[in-house]
Amino acid sequence: MDGLLPLWKERGMTSHDCVFKLRKILHTKKIGHGGTLDPNVEGVLPICIGKATKVIEYLADSGKIYEGEITLGFSTTTEDKSGEKVESKKVEKLLTEEKIDSIMQSFVGEITQIPPMYSAVKVNGKRLYEYARTNQIVTRPVRKVKIYRFKRISKLHWDKDKGLLSWRFEVACGKGTYVRTLAVDTGKKLGYPAHMSDLVRLASAGMEKNQAITLQQVADYFEAGTFEKYLLPLEIGVARFKRVDIDEQVWKKVKNGMRLAYEVFALEEMPTEEIALFYQGKVVSIYQPNPKEKNKLKPSKVLRNGV
Image 1 (tube, rainbow, N blue to C red):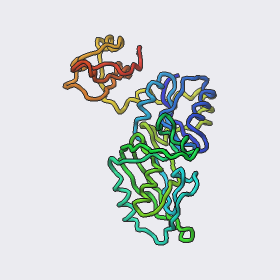
Image 2: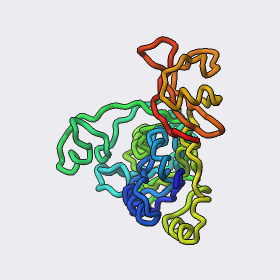
Image 3: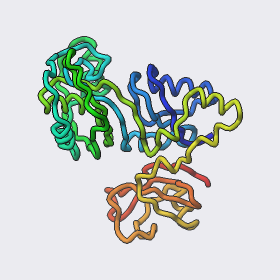
Image 4: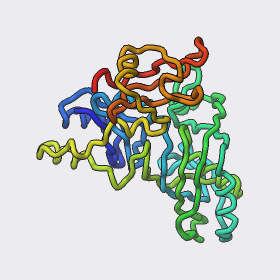
C-alpha cells in the first residue's frame, strides 16, 4: 500500500497520535505525517504511506491555508486560547474594518517572526516549549516567512462588556509560519494584546478539506476494502518541482544513480533548483545541481527503482 492520505485531524489529538492509530488500522508501520498540527487545531494532515514516506520532507516544506479567529483584548503564554492570560487591555471602542484590513494587508509578503515560546523550535539542542515549561528565559531566533494572503472573512464581533473584539480570517502562508504569532503581531499593530482564538487548516501540500477523511472513515473504508481509492498518488508530493519526462535510455542511467549533464534531460539551461524526473508517467527520482561538477546534476532522492 503506497500513497498520500489527506487525513482530517480532529481536535484533541496530536499528529503523532494520528500516525499511531493509522498504523494499527492499516496494519503497516511505514506511515508518517507531512506537517505537524497542534492538538487544539483541526484540519488537513498529510499522511504518507509506504513508498510515499520518501516525500515527507517535501510536504512539510509546502504552503498551507488556514481559517481562524483573532481576538483582541488579552494575550496568552501560548499565543492561543489554551494558554494563561499575560496582558489585558479592554477594547473600549469599535475599530473600523478598514483599519483592520489595512493592518492585515501589511503582513502580506516576506515578514520576520519570533517563534512562540510554546513551540518545537530548537535552541541549543532543546525545544522552546521545554524552556517555557521551566520558566527559563532564552533568546529566540528571528525567522523569515512568507504570507501570500491574509484577509478578514467575517464581520467584527465586539463584546463591549468584556472589552473583546474578534473576527475570522483566512491566511495562505509558506513553510515555518506561526499563525498564532501572526495573530499576536496583528494585535500589536492595532495597539492591543491579542491571541489566536481558533484555527482550522483547510489545505496543506496541495491537499484540501474536501478530499480529507477522518480516522473513523479510514477504519470503515479499510474494513470495507475500499480504502485505497481515497489515497492520492505519490506524484502529488513532488508537485512543487519542475517536471522532466525521461525516456528509457535516460531511465537506465537514472535508475543507477548516475550524475548527468543537464543536456541529457533535454533542458535548455542548467536548473538552479531540484527537478522531478518522470518515467512512464510516474515520478522516479529527484535530481539537484551538483556543486562539485559544473553543469551536472546528481540524485538527491530516489523514489522508485522500478516502474
